[in-house]
Image 1 (tube, rainbow, N blue to C red):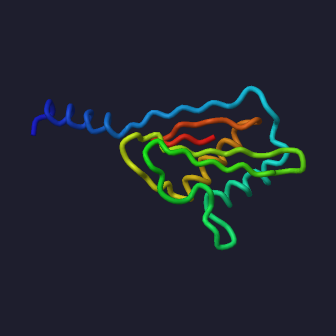
Image 2 (cartoon, helix red, strand yellow):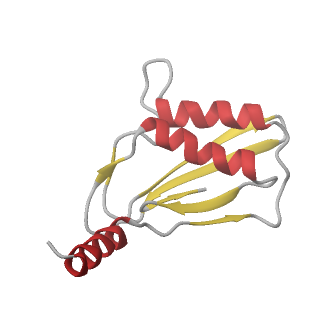
Image 3 (cartoon, one colour):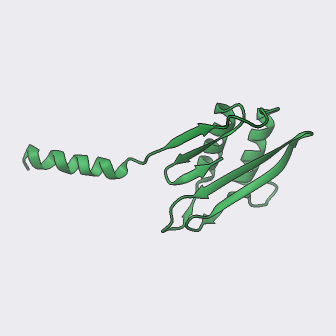
Length: 123
């Protein structure tokens, strides 16, 4: 195969595998009072707990969003959300990816934030 044929083929394949991502931290709202406590609740919502399924486990229909609102500290509640941005197919998000992406919003933003990554929205 000639280089002139190989190069366009490689570029076409690379172009289809690159997924745009966006991330924004919130500019208003409460600052995290206890990030460790927030991460604890994310792990429970993504992995399940005490033999129960977590709020973010299972298959997401096209465009479906799932949320979990929990009282974190005595004076602060957490409102987490995960959404399948694909409008044509259902997907099951890996528990470890759920934890990783939501914890990025806790660790990387003083007031939380939102990221769109690989066809999923995390906030």
